Image 1 (tube, rainbow, N blue to C red):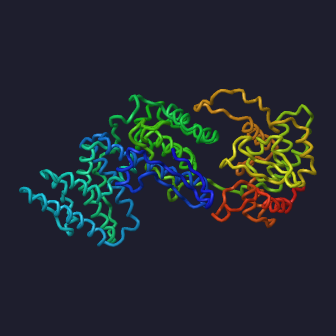
Image 2 (tube, rainbow, N blue to C red; image 1 turned 45 degrees about the vertical axis):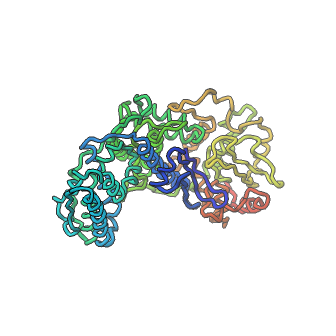
Image 3 (cartoon, rainbow, N blue to C red; image 1 turned 180 degrees about the vertical axis):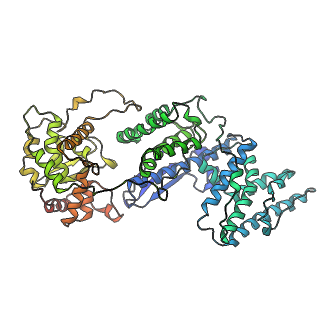
Length: 572
């Protein structure tokens, strides 16, 4: 498994993927690195975009390992004649799509095919010295001839055929393509694929040559290709069984429990429940790309935005099926031959459906004037339950810290502390879920202290301030198909419902989360440095340089205090 993280010195997003010892020599010969592959993206990239980029990178590396393993062991999928041409058709689309927008100079493509013809002729000349051989090629100017069949040259090549096929593989970038598709082929399957791809290599080059001259007429060649249905090769599955969508998710969740957060697992279970409904509980180890596309189309037609479909549903499916399709390791994999979602893009289509935005995401004065006075009016007898205590204090804490609702609702008594003679709250993963799993300390606004927050905390029992720790009744291992909802999450949800009941009903905002937008906006207007505001809210650094600031340390603390003191009071 490859874990995404930040480089401690530069702040860049980094990850590593080790190359198994048995595959190192063959992997290095094909792809370069022998010991490990490294992932790196700029520090300014958002967490969501970094995760998406890392997922795509990891799928590509695991696809490379899959095909190198197949070539090393001689195992992999055989291809029928139709499958070979279907896979060659996918290669044709891959080749032409990569260069469709900017094909470059026509000479580029005529030179490319000329090099291939020259290399094949050299091999033919070498073979003819060992015996008679008939080999006919065609000059580049005949590339427009649709009857041209280079595949016919492969018949009767004798001893040089493997070398000719290797020349084709190099010219077609076959290993890169097969790794992207995560298709592991047997020696016979690979030979059939390369034989089929030779004519498509010529046809793709001819098309790109025409595109480079300005000819963008309709390409009818794709209509000739059969639908690609990934084959199952020997050893590609454990036990040859089947799994429903939820069973696959359960296997992934158990194998990756220590590397994923509870909130991620709670979000993703809804994805696989939807896929379970779509596939009617069928075996997803045989799921085809066509079925995946049909599911994505159904998601898009159900009034979901492109962002939701791509970054929640498709990203989750791509990760879980990628785990299932990778080579077998200690924590799973080798359940299926190919990831059906490997080629799905997470970027939005042109003209795709976007969320309709009718208002700003921060709270308006009239909405704040409803929430904050209602919260202050809550009385707290000694018997008050966690939700009542949250109604009294959570909104005010959200308003003055810009924290996430869950971070406030999971606060413990010991998280409110003095630092350099100033009261502060420590938002820490020790209390529950914190995005990026990084603790931070935020000074408390003097208005909160004047209003009695510290008195409330000092009277409270040890432990969580806003929920009863005994409310987590399910103490055993979590069931991935029925993830538990932690008490602080329930409190945050009930708090949002209470705000709606107060009359803040505009669906253009989220009742709790809107305080983060409100805090950042008021901080900007007050002239608070954006680096400091980002730290207070727990937002990722925007540049590598800002990762060097240690605002939570002794030297940076006065800057945080000045920022909070400059933050305007809520006078309601």
